[in-house]
Amino acid sequence: MEISIIVPIYKVEKYLQRCIDSVLSQDFTDWEMILVDDGSPDRCPEICDENAYKDSRIKVIHKANGGLISARQAGVRIASGKYLMHLDSDDWLQPKALSTLYNQIIKGYDMVRGGAQRITPDGKIIPLENYKITNGEVIGSENFLINIYTGKVAPYLWGALYRANLFDDTVFDESIENKISLGEDVVTNMLVGMKINKALYIEDIVYNYAYNPNSIMASSAVSDDYGKRLESLLYRRIISKYPELESWRFAKYASYTFTTCCNPNYGFSSYYDKDVQYLKDPLYANKIRELVPAKFLRFATYKPLYKLYTWAYRTALKIIRRQKNQKTKLK
Image 1 (cartoon, rainbow, N blue to C red):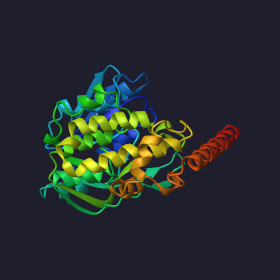
Image 2 (cartoon, rainbow, N blue to C red):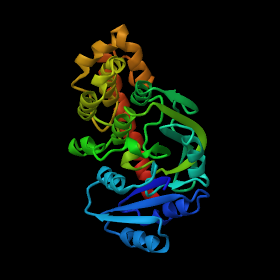
Image 3 (tube, rainbow, N blue to C red):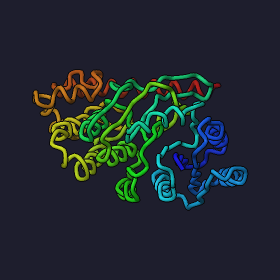
Image 4 (cartoon, one colour):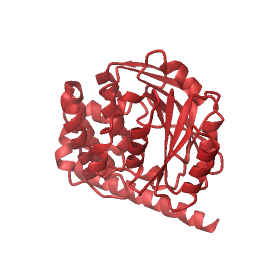
């Protein structure tokens, strides 16, 4: 078996068959698809079983609800393929996605990531976020980790083919134990990244991401407390082992503070007085400016003006969101 495709499933009755069909229609056929029903309360369990009955390459796991990460872990535990793909159940693959990635990874890569596009409910295509590296090789585990950590490459688990033995039985344990819900892809990619010596990024579109601009995931940002807890986990398990990542760690800590100050879901960060010092230090300032959009850093070193600016920014966003919600209700 060459490729194992892991599909975590929960309350996606409307989209699940589209996801499954996108795998069934691939020109590359040496795969197994592991459908992990994470205690879904709709017809998803039946849809899984119906498809498994029709095609022996489809395996089904029915489990109690434990969340996305536990579902992925359950799939990894029974995967038998040489290579591994994570596919979210409301998304779907482009034709020839598997063969496109497979024809590259067999050249000796540990991971090959293809291009992706976001599709809105009305069929509009929205390009993925801009990343510095979308085409070319990344050599060395530390180099791979720095690129993931600093956002120079796409951080997602989906849309890529991995060497399966990168994922041992414990790779998801830290995220489960620490209740990581946002940023879990970064955590997992960095944990497996310690074993990645050669990765390839290609621009061929292989993945369609179902995008809902009004969803929590589309609009959410982590609080500074959550972000710092996430950073603590990464430091303990990974960053402390790689000296080049150390200075980036402090810059990343500070970045959560400045983005939190401008997030309408939160307020002015209690960490401001501490983290603004990093923005005044040449060793970290450029790194922070690389991590944080410029609009979040205007007047950042002048507290009274910055408090006024971030209050106005948060207020404006709240008004815009309220107007969007009112328009949606009127439709």
